[in-house]
Length: 340
Image 1 (tube, rainbow, N blue to C red):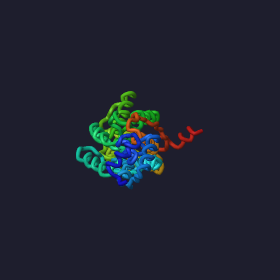
Image 2: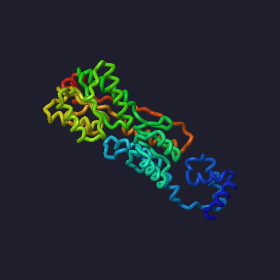
Image 3: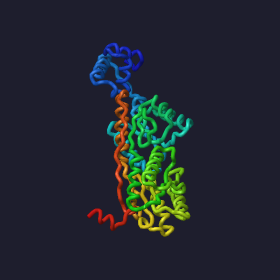
Image 4: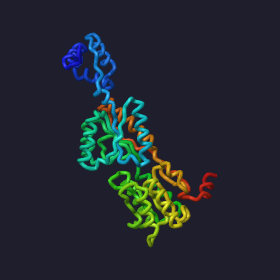
């Protein structure tokens, strides 16, 4: 019997189910309970129905991973985590680099989702609330790292508390002139780390100096280097720098060396993310370690749950971070004393 609308109707009649359920068995067997699926397959066999291989059904096993910038080393382990989970559940993955900040880029992204017949999407870019709703009306969505909508599942960290912890550490080293170099504020992480920085200044009774709070338009090494050089040669330079990225922190250390400023003796530098550059810098960078692989893997597990069960409850997960103390914020002698 040929594959046709009539044949699906006949199978449904023989199996005692709806045509829609038969269609799900053909295209999304994971959405149908095993007993019903077996009933339908038995009916197919009785009727001599042999489903043809369908490109559409195969492509439905695709998950789109959206990242704002693939060159940012932070996302490498996040992507690895998502891909690892997806592979375990037999999904293909496709990485899309889009910031999705406007209607035009969103429409292009939606066209990608439709043309590839994706069955789910993991979003790492910050979106406007209504944009999440537009994508969510098409397929399951999980927000990874960045999240701006409480209506959809997300996996992230508490950026505010992590930033506050950094400030406590810097303050404990006797530094009071603390600068903050941040990424673009369209990202939630940047806004939350800024909030943590400012909250600690208020708590400790430290003055907010506008020249000591810099916002970069991108996480870019050269841009950060130029900004720190200007900061360190100003009439009132800081004695500590909290950088919202290890890439910025590495640029700060290079700028300090250029101007013969010793780290950590004259200037403490603390970064964020614990990417590879934090350990190969000299001195090694004190930083907040994010569980990047786990962020991605957990997002992959949740998107799978939503694909298999569209009515699954949303999950909102904040993973723990850890302050890793290295030479850029504390002398080797002090580190040795702490270890002992």
